[in-house]
Amino acid sequence: MRVLIIDKHPIIMAGCQFLVGSTSDMELRAAYTAEAGLEAFIDWRPDIVVLDLQMPGSPAVGYIERLFEHDPGARIVVHSSSEDPLVAAHMIGLGARAFVSKTEDAACVLTAIREVSAGNFYMSPRLAQKVATLRVAPHAKVSPRISARERDILTMLATGKSMAEVAQTVNLSYKSISAICNRLRTRFDARTTIELVRIAVLLGIC
Image 1 (cartoon, helix red, strand yellow):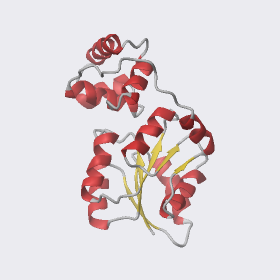
Image 2: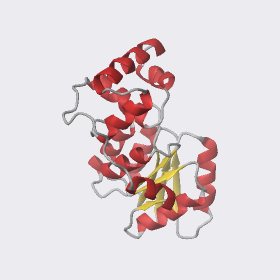
Image 3: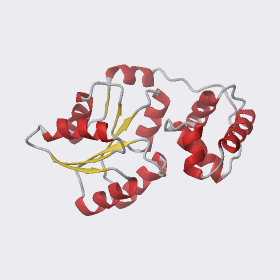
Image 4: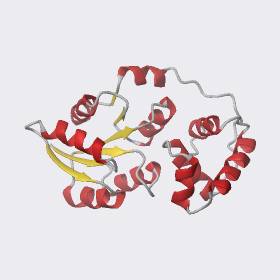
């Protein structure tokens, strides 16, 4: 089984490499950038992709779509620092076959790889229970209009990036990103940025 791990964190990558490399039936390749990961995916055609949700300069939604453009049957395990069930549900809705939080035992990654390889979906029982109990918030039935830039900002926030990280990614000041988020909170009737992101995910905006 060929496993491609795309992750920007050397420590996380080393842990995944140790786990996967310790098995006799898996061959591993690693990529530390989004573009290197895409190149390896196209050239090597792995059986499973373990994808860091927060790769710099490449929002997860668009990146997963790019993987599926090259291989509609791609089997993706999302590996994220987020434990938000809305984020997990959204990634599965985009076509990922598993969602594993980086706060969980590292062995969960190996479990997810094996489950996905067997044709199954996977989340940890704790996270799966949270996803199962989600209820759509009683907000506007019609999604507010947003620009492409606003959508990109919401998507990055949904993957766990801070406003400072978003500002650096889109080459704007922190003050500008904060002002955009304030306008979006008003438009979406959200009290906090976290609530704003939750509503946007529920409405399928990001």
